[in-house]
Length: 402
Ligand code: HSE
Image 1 (cartoon, rainbow, N blue to C red):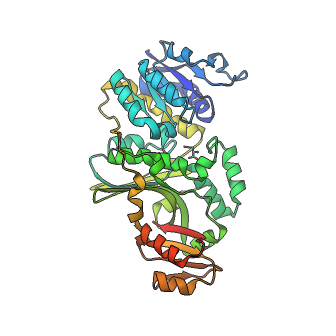
Image 2: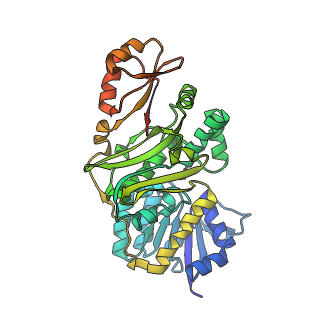
């Protein structure tokens, strides 16, 4: 039987999960791919003396590049550098590259796809968004014939885990985060999770697939969950809503509104029922309607499943695969349109500002609260900002309704 040699770059949570999957599911992989997958090299800064794979570990990337038996490099190091340099070198050496590294895809995906095409190899990244959920390949393939109106989702397992713990069990933010870190869900620097950067990279990738436009991640309006307070959780509960961190790309009349921020979701929204480390991506298209992809968004096993799954198109079609991402880098900042984005919002100001709110926002609905909490009309970001500025007191919270 034919053999396909792989190298693992980064032997952390995901890299370890891939090695385990390839070992434990040898028979399933053989019958699925029609060939044997053999780990040839593992690149990491560390040694793993007690690991069954210790003899494969190298600290020298040239061992990977010079190994003719390595057909596919699986990059699971995370971060932009040296992941970028290793990806370019691997592709230029005629090796396919599979990655779970959303940062490098969001920042350099267009360049990698171009080099892969020139070299007649493949660049695949199913694991970069949604962990184990097949979402990249469906967006590249079976839903593209639709007019895509929106792609929205819970794209970060760590923050969804934290929000679930805070809402359901009344846990503190710090305890919930420590728990997510212990389970291997969080990024090396968990600020990327809780400040929304990780979800921002993921919605940038999904936007590129849905619209063919690759925006600069730095220009995507991004808010995390660090500003969500106990009072907001209580207000949401009163309204029978849940707070979820969503990445959204809305394509409307030729304008793309791309953003990451916490949203208030009604209890009958499918995304509101997604708890713990689970992610879900909803695609709204014409004539498709709504479809939702759901599954475990982080963790060793789920992410490894998506990484190894990317071998199928490589082995089945090689460079003949007609389905490649159309990443077209655009110079327009994604947040240029954001000020025109319209939504209803929950706003909390210090108690005592009710009169001013009535005067400036008009006849809003107040929420029973120890603060001056109310719900605006559906209006643009610019309009809300102007009104808040006119009131001139610190805004304690502003959370949009879905
Ligand atoms: N830190 C990420 C998350 C890992 O929590 O979703 C998967 O991309």
